[in-house]
Amino acid sequence: MRESTLQIALAALGISVIGLLIELKKRDNKKNKVKDNDPPIPKRQASIRRYEALILERGSVGSKDYRVHVLQKDTSQRARELSLWHDVPLVAPSAPSSAPASPRNAPPLFNFVCEIPKCTRKKFEVATDETKCPIKQDEKKGVLREFKKGDIFFNYGCFPRTWEDPRHVSKDTGYPGDNDPLDVCEIGIRQIGTGQVRAVKVLGVLAMIDDDETDWKVVAIDVDDRWAPELNDVEDVERLLPGTISFIREWFRTYKIPDGKPPNKFALEERCMPRAYAHGVIRDTHAAYRDLLASGGHEGLHLPADISSLTGLARDSEIVDRRLPLSPAKATL
Image 1 (cartoon, rainbow, N blue to C red):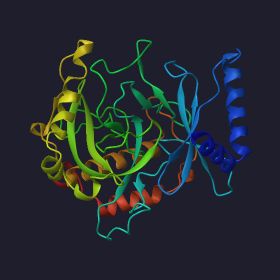
Image 2 (cartoon, rainbow, N blue to C red):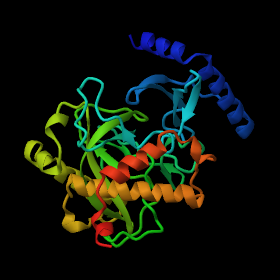
Image 3 (cartoon, one colour):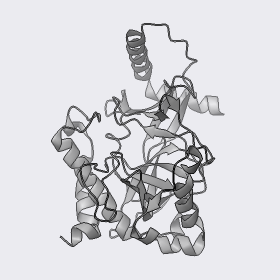
């Protein structure tokens, strides 16, 4: 069944995928000047809300060369590689394909890019300093990183077209941003694969301080999850899934202790702030992302050469500015 599904996906994408893979292979050969002995590239389909994409894994899992790329058909039915940071819209369509349209005043849904599936421990992340920003396994001092604490119990990733600005000190935490997209903890039942993009409902946010940097953790749920219709704010999570927020907080507080580091801290009295507060954080980090594009970059981050090529960016900004509240820090200015 899986092989049949993959064959259908490949046929739909056409030989453009093959051409792109050949070009990527040529590029690798020119760069390394050695024969590439990696095994064939595994391929799987990934649902990116109302369109299908193909996830390509290049290199060997557990190696420094391993990358997860995402391809999508453009309007001419040719395959192109997506940047998971720049090309995927922040705002998702308002309703899942299996549900009736959401009320016009309902909060927007957002596209969640999964980096680390639940019940796994390899520390994958969007490579914001590489062309097309694929997903790679993070490394420190030449060693690939895994969570020594153990498997993470929620799907972990980020929101595209957001940025925690290291040049800006947050009034909420007193520390600058961590130079990454906004982190998201998806608490649904299903395991979401690395590189998959799912529409989520935002429920709350934790203000973590990690190595003297602000590192917000948005709590969200896949809109197609069994619990999604019943969860609309953090108080619903506390009532229906008691302990979930505390487990997330304590996981992040202690996950670096096995590496010999002290516990992480949390601002805002360690509270998980409600949905409206989280929406303000999303608005701020999307504004910071737009400022990043306008300024031309920061410390090696890879930005698109042509900002006008970013499909849906104007829609993202219009919805975020019109429908999300100002963060409390901005509202008091």
